[in-house]
Length: 158
Image (cartoon, rainbow, N blue to C red; front, side, top):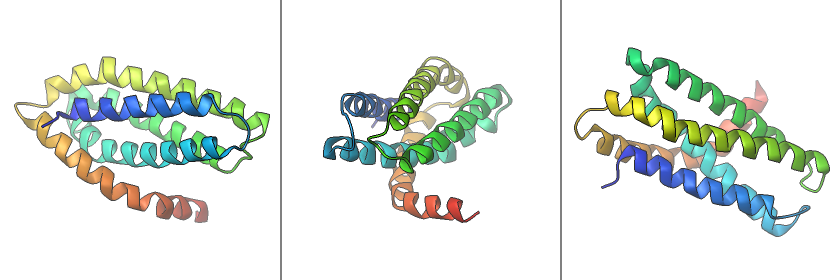
């Protein structure tokens, strides 16, 4: 069974690949739309599951609070960028410019999580907790995948 770190890193590797695939496309092509759709849904469910499992544990411990809060704030910034991109014409130069910002910011976020947050989390999660949290993360991610559209619609209403 995977640990929470392996589960998150596996998602990150998928996200890196999707970001590169999207960057290699042009215009409002089927390839760009398909890769964006896959990226959007996976990142949205990943971030929510990560916050509800991994970060909820870190934020409950004094030594993990600052890193957890920082990462959750970055999730919000990245989410805002993704929503803006979702509402834009994929063939516009503005879409590509904003996407490049998202790609840069998200790559930085993933690096920071893997290099800094995981190190602190290893001091917080004891024994086999890292495996138990991986299971909770995967279950929550599946549930969140079904809620992405509903959450987006709800946020537009407010």
